[in-house]
Image 1 (cartoon, rainbow over the protein chains, first blue to last red):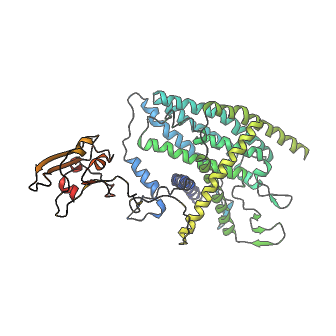
Image 2 (cartoon, rainbow over the protein chains, first blue to last red; image 1 turned 180 degrees about the vertical axis):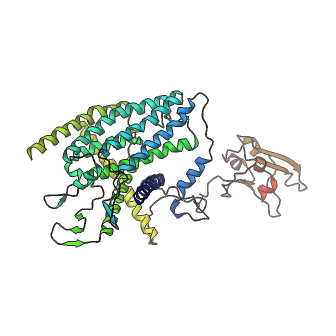
Image 3 (tube, each protein chain N blue to C red; image 1 turned 135 degrees about the horizontal axis):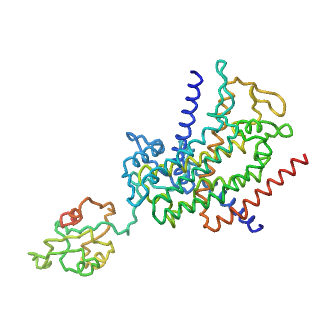
Length: 358
Length: 157
């Protein structure tokens, strides 16, 4: 009984974390772009004149979307048209299940993994679910039965094909170094030290793999440098025929993808919840000496470190989105097939050679 | 490949520029949050309804009709402004003035602001300096068209 309750609590907490942070990413995106461009950004939404730097803005947006007309065009395939945004949303939402937030928490003889489900193919699960979420894009483009949405859906499919390969190949080097697909054990491996003082994070072992993964993952989230399926300036994109909350769901899914990509970057390349030199009983400094901490504080520090890293990568992705102009279709294909895939193959071979020599 | 490497450096440079903007502006925002006054601000925004930009003196804003010392309009209903107006938004009805020096005065003077393009030709054409556009009044939006037909009372007011 208590086990079921714990699992339920974990599901609720991780989902709430995912959705609330994604909701506030919309606010963060507006504010960060504003600060980058010497503006102030959304700060007018208020409750009884309390503004608090615009923190109510996401709720105002949500309420607006709720009360907009939900229009389904007569020429669309109604069932698939309605299904598509939920499909996209659902597949992205499931990915949070395998993300480890922290180490094993021990309360009253119970051992609770701070992770909803510790799958032994966790990495593949995330990649697979992220790829499946593109079905929402393709289906919506198809089922809306209009020219622009179809073009958007086709572009989504083409982008998927050219980036999924590089994304997968860039991770092979990482899987060779940390011989596991289980996200919790990948994080555990990164707690070890290199030369006795350097944390063995993925970025130090796989710098090239990190760069390829970063580019491919940003392409995965379909935002501006790689926003071909949307293409606001030319085709309006696969969600042209959507309105109201279903359109909002697509936008929200975009932000959830940003968040899950940040989680993946953190978990795979930046040590997940690992704090440098913090082991289960406290800090062990590389220059000698130690600072012992109680179990609860160690776990809290780990969760905090995970959150800080994730927020940093969210910040970084928003920075990328507001810095670069978008790629043209052929440039995107060139980058995917001619640069990223050969580079990731070189990365695999290089990793193999280095590992066999050492 | 070497070309691509050059692009790569430029890409990193670009993100450094935007990140610098972010960090510098954020620094000043945080200083402001702690109540520290600085000369440079984090944003160049003017928060419009609360703060207003001072309007330049030569800015062409809402019209007004000038008065003589006895309170009557200075206008002599010569129709020059109505003639020169490119959007034909000025309507004047002249009436005879008892003073033989003045001869005419406008019994009705309507500016249709829905058509006015704020070119200022009426001000330039006026021989009596009776119409000016120096009220610094720029918030003249209304919910109905009728409210934008400014008559003699409103213009003198």
